[in-house]
Image (cartoon, rainbow, N blue to C red; front, side):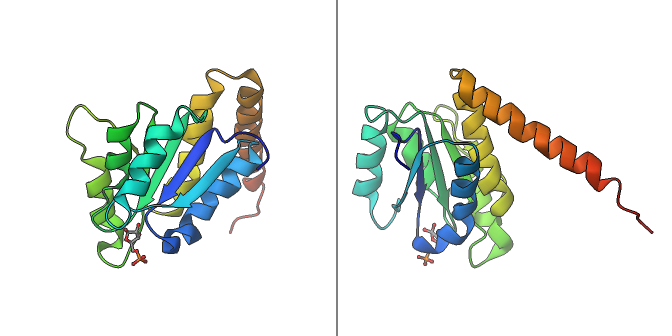
Length: 165
Ligand code: RP5
């Protein structure tokens, strides 16, 4: 996006993009500039550290980190930045993503990671949580976030008009 990114999306593998695309789509809907990169806590740790150390100086406000399996990415990110870090566990190849959920959510006290749900719901909610954080200090983002929520409410109410059996 043209504007300076406010949100940085990191994912451990290109294979995570199928899920994390939903974070990007949601941020786009809300007009939040972001950038997304493949960077792994295991395969490219120096890239992760470099990105996180420089994120605040580059104007970012929130980092979203997605990984599967023994998912250390969000925790490593949180260790290298004071920005809020949101973790999204990927479903992965075993245990339906429970491995990644527990790896991401069970941070020892001191370095917080805000962990969302496994997979697509978590990817979407990470974008919404990032927007809610940004909305605290930006009236225009707040308006867009409230409008998104309102549209969702209206849709849910309209869905109740379905003629259910
Ligand atoms: C993790 O390993 C990635 O975040 C991904 O979810 C998982 C599998 O990666 P690939 O083998 O598909 O590259 O580090």
